[in-house]
Image (cartoon, rainbow, N blue to C red; front, top):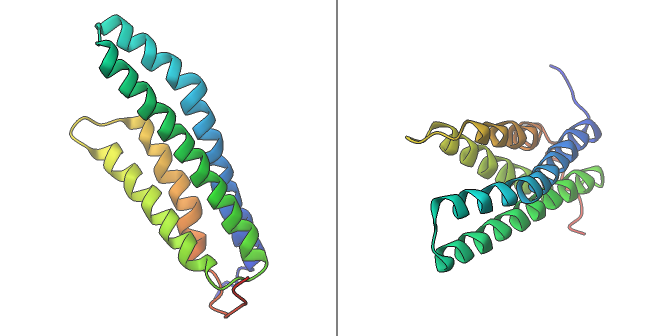
Length: 137
């Protein structure tokens, strides 16, 4: 059986976290301008427009924080901390499932397929992490 070191798995998860963080930057700096233009062209009212702006900013911040969390998981795996496998599986599963839902919804957003890729970068290595019981800190 192929044995993969935890440091290799940690590097892959770290890359997934970086990809999500960079996607959050693109989401904010590129997408925010596009969504504002679309709302102004559609004649969206000021209340709805402001609410959508706040939601867009919050989702960008949440994506950035999830990416940072993924990077911390990758770093923590190198220290063989005991909770990292569960965190990698949780974060990877959530991002992958979100990507699958967005990609296959009745009104598909094909660009959400990137979340499937990012989620798998975190989920799949998490499945192969060592089961050794390391310290909590």
